[in-house]
Amino acid sequence: MADILSLKESVLVYLDRSGGLQKLTEDCKPFNDPQLSEAVYRFRFSVNPSDVIEVDPVLGDCVLHEPLRATVLFQSVCFLAIKTLSLIEKIHTESQVNVILNFTHLPPFPEYTLDLCRFPRVYGPMRPVSMEGLVIAMTRVTKYTQGARFLCVSDDCPCSKGFHHIRVHAPGATESATVRNHFCCMMCGSQLKEDVKFRVLGDKQLVELIHVKALDVLSGRQQSSLRYQSVTLFLRGRSATNILIVIYLIIITMYGTINIRETNLIKK
Image (tube, rainbow, N blue to C red):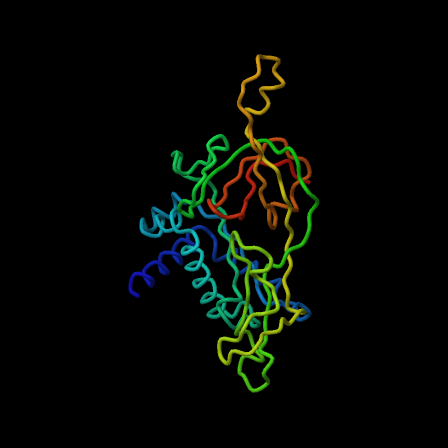
């Protein structure tokens, strides 16, 4: 417990030094619109691993090797800041705060690079890795569910109102993991029903990526017997809406998931 409190204090110090708390304050202002009703409020932070390590090496190790745990720590600190400073009155539970960590860069070591020529065939640790290649195809931008609110169908249950059951899209999850019709109430075991007016939607786009060496076929040299397999990735949020034309793409993703962030795009 003491270790968790220490890590949360380090998160608070990092957000204060990096301007994250000021950004949080500014991002909260649009959410105070009386006509806006959402189950989940999304906040995005740029994280510099080098700066985090300077604040707290343990937190830096957590960010680089346990990013999902680090996200939970940032989520908890942001929720406490929002409630303490009364930034959004409509937030009642920590699960309503959806935090996205965007890495500014990764350490220049092979462990943090995913080569398309040596794509892993087995599961590995869920850590952020950088990945680069040529985009050979992309779909149009469509919608997916970022978060949803569910209510218990039993009127006598406390979970029939309020924000006790919040589903948030997790990295690597499918749409059915966030929204489906057979969730059960944790309190009484009755069926849950989605409150559709609180559903939060986001943008997604599929991109097909292939190694740059695949262009060797255009050089006119003797062709190799090697064949390159493309990889399909999901771009979500700003990554999807910012793309107009992409020729060469460098991304930072979490190994084993489909949570992508763009770093070198031709934008609208």
